[in-house]
Image 1: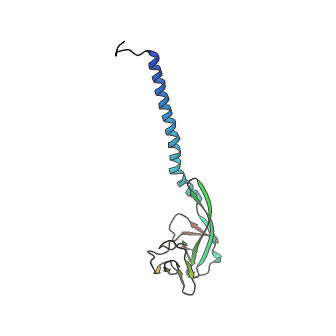
Image 2 (image 1 turned 60 degrees about the vertical axis):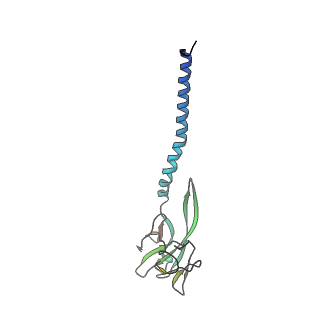
Image 3 (image 1 turned 120 degrees about the vertical axis):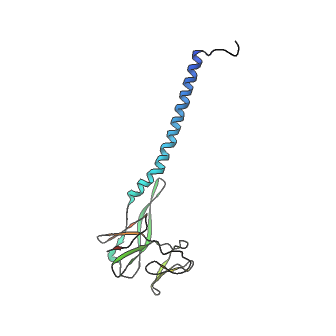
Length: 171
């Protein structure tokens, strides 16, 4: 027999079985990688919406023009795991009755700031930034006003939205 030998039927049948097996294994591996990848990309976004608003406390605890630090619990998603964490924010009720709630972190480098009643301003001890009661920068290296939560008031409860910049709300 030379180089022009003909293939026999059993040899062609084995090749077809092996090709089918290889394609089948490839399809299973693709599904095993693709399905979790789709859930990873889209599931947390759906889940984040389900967490909704955060109950931050009672409106009745607030006095006009006197900032109060609120402490509350909220849920945070890290990949597939949901954590419950304690957080805080600064709430200011102005004379007209609108409520503004500020993030507790300085906009310069993220240090925690505090309210200084004698100076009537928020002060960051790290680099000297100072903020007015309405959140605007008074002095220091902070590049922008204090970040705010979106706020809504239902009954006597303050609700904060965890994923957006806030606006003032009338009480």
